[in-house]
Structure formats: structure tokens, C-alpha cells
Image (cartoon, rainbow, N blue to C red; front, side):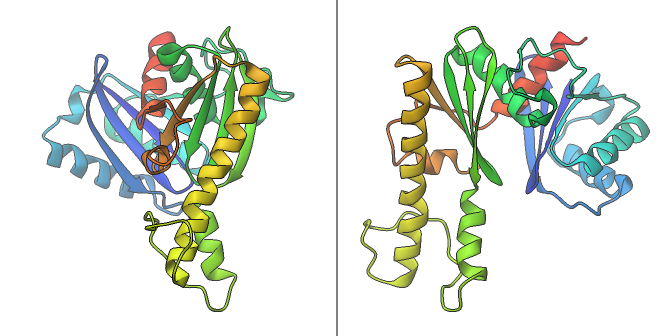
Length: 254
């Protein structure tokens, strides 16, 4: 089996593959000061709870946008699993040509998503990843990574309204009954949810104007389904896109 680890700024998503089948997955909070031993205890408990045996793992693949935790999980893998992980970086074969001015600036998760999206959905494509930041990534017809756009994430924006204003409350990100809110909470929910729908639709339209009318749009990340329900521009929602890409890259580098 293969353990895939996607280390993000807010969450760490882990998935176990048997061949091409994702047999179990977990999402835990990113804790920058947690030690390898602490993450190891958590990981082994998750394996125990799910009924899977970590000694059957034959590989580990890591995508990380948090450099300190890259080392943490590398040490965990080597010490507790006896496996040297494949860490996606500039030296790893991905099959995707990076057309960025400086390819090293592109986050590993964005490259991994590009690999999976092109293999599964073809190109040209726009990947919208609703993470800590909301990212838009462009893939050419030939599968090249062309670049993209980065916007504040939905939760960051909602939290900013609460922390940077005197009278606005912290809200749950749920759909309000209408765009015109009848109270403060509904008004904030409308601005955040429907405002982000407008952001997505506007950015997708601009990407389509540059990539062509046949561009596919794939949504991923924790809030992809919430946004996709409010718009027709997201054609596919793939919550495990990054894990799928990690598995594909691991197979390329065996």
C-alpha cells in the first residue's frame, strides 16, 4: 500500500492507496510545532482505528507547502515506517512542464493537482483549489502548467471580517436563504458565499478567454462542493485530486 500525505497550511490530508483504490483517508489540523513523535502517535492511531496495518505500506509520497513539516513527516516516515518518502519538489519527475517564470515558486500542491487534472480530465483545464488560499491553475492542451491566480481563501476572508471589525460576528459558512440578507449574519454569509461564487465565475471566464472555449474546470479542496452547488462553471468536483496526483507521481518515480 501507498501512504500519500498532502501538507497544507490549515489541514494535512492523508490517504492510503491499494493500487489505484483509495481505501481510507483522514484530515487533521496542521500544527507547525508538533514533533515527529507526536504525529507518529496520531498516524498509528488512525491506522489502528481504520483497521489497516501500517507495516503493509510499501511507499510514502509527500506534497508540502509547509517546509518545517516536510522534514517532520520525512523523519516520521523513516523512523516509524522504515520508508524514505518521495517528496515532490523540483527534482521529481512529474511529466508536467512548468511554464512559470521561476518554476521553483510553484507550490508542490499546485503541480500535483496539475498532474492529476490533466491525466483525469485532459486539457486545457482550470483547477480551482479552495484551500487556505483559493488558487486558479491553468493547464494547456499539451499538459503544460502555465501559471494561475491566487486569492485569499474563503475562511481567511470570513475570519478577517470578524477580527478586523468591531461589530461583525464570527459566522458559519452556510448558504443564506437569499442574496439580500435580512440580518448581519445573513448579510455576511451572502457576501462571503455569493461573493466567492462571483470571484470564481469571473476568474473562470477570464481563463477561458485565454485558454479557449473547450477549457475544463475542476474544483477541489474543502469547500469546493459548497461553491459548486451555486454555479454551473465548475464541471467536476474532485475532493481527492491532490492525493490522486501524489499516487500518479509516485508511480512515475518508482
